[in-house]
Length: 116
Length: 111
Image (cartoon, chains in turn red, orange):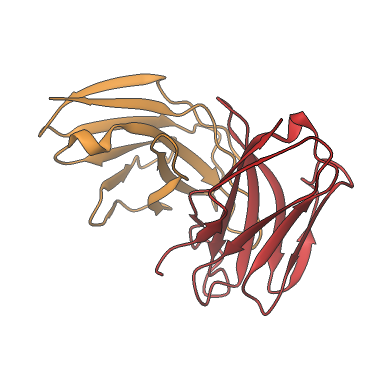
């Protein structure tokens, strides 16, 4: 597809379970970002990948959150021992900042995570 | 990144031009202005960005004042599908720099 693809689109799970969220960036985009958006609030930065490395993890809220990227493509955000406060829409964005750093980020439609 | 100020809401008649203002009086010389919009239950959609010069693409036009302290996003012929929250963001063009979304402007296009 032409855009950023995220799966699943919706995830409902019980408190304490682990979840994995997937992001397929636009082909050829070297930069990948994860954000979180709680209901009625703005976007909160989580982590940035350049290639397969994560030079900025400063937004990850706790050690229950981790992310990886492989093949300079797909990224997975993992949340362990989920808590109700983790309920949010998790958004992924990619950009081709190897072309120029001002290149815009393009977003997927997110994964809506609900913790019961 | 410099802060931005936008009106919380605006209305526009279908078929008319929608002009959305943004104030960024503390913008630095190398910061770009980006516009995104978010339609309910969707991810933010990139619209346009610019540094100094006015920009136009298939979606919109961006007018940046000469002193760069404010800008206007113009949707030339608004449709009902343009109803969304519009965000004006100022960002330093450094690889990896995050986007910081403010409150935005809720644009409602009326039939």
